[in-house]
Image (tube, rainbow, N blue to C red; front, side, top):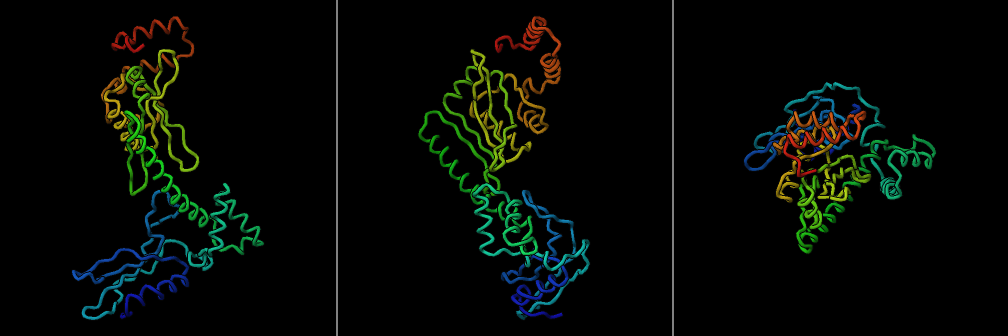
Length: 330
């Protein structure tokens, strides 16, 4: 079946057919000849697109698609393959993306709501109330959420660049200031920093440290990870800090490696929570006492025994420190 030029293929019939049929389409992969002319082009149902990280789109592996192939020696294209069947219910025309496209005023409303600390769900309710009902608001809540996410991503990129510039300035102008960061797909993924005082604290009190990954920032959902030691006054002192975009083994491994590079030596003991990713990251980069299962078991049993009397604890603690050559870290 001859269908004409690429412009004709991609500009009109597919979107009209999809709109009538009750599904959305998007351009997919393509192949080219050696002279860069498109050989084959695929148009697929959007329900066949894989779900991306931090995306609200759902994919159910729909195989409906149409593939166009170049007609050799002419500017025309023909249908090479057409898979018509969908594996999901088709939608009403009013629910398709084309019908839900936002006007400039609607986008402006979402931006203003976001800057006023109004979330996308509440913004959608307000818009419906102002318009006189949900039937007069074509975009769905998910469209409001997606636009808000995209806005925050742009703002987040600018904020991330600003903090990287600030940290680089400190590294260049402050004595003995360390700063490292890592990006994934041009997005700030991890960062670690420590100033001169924090390095001095670690050199003096860094035999036993702890780090906590329970602090999450509100705006960009990044995890704040402070590294802490105890000084000779039994007060907590910070010996480094990190920010992570996710709590994966890879992120924690990167953070711990940068921590060790900055300070130049491993702590004798690391205390942390029971997070599996943290545990695996530490085991990946260290062979110290934290990975000694016998020490960890006995240490946990001793520390978490709420019925043990203080004098008994002191005796057992001394024996544990002596057995593992930790007397100087008390």
